[in-house]
Length: 42
Image (cartoon, rainbow, N blue to C red):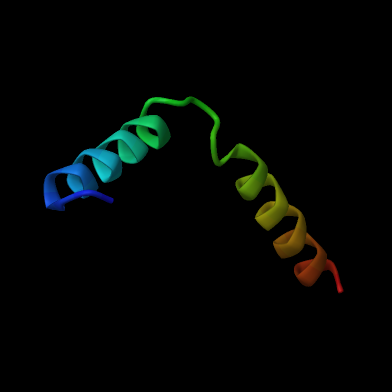
């Protein structure tokens, strides 16, 4: 990181990637759903 503005730009770019990529956390949600279901059934 060269300076504070470069850091801000990188953070903003990362945020935009996550925000505008549909389904980016779908695997996490599915994994959590399986774990919760397994806990409830046991």
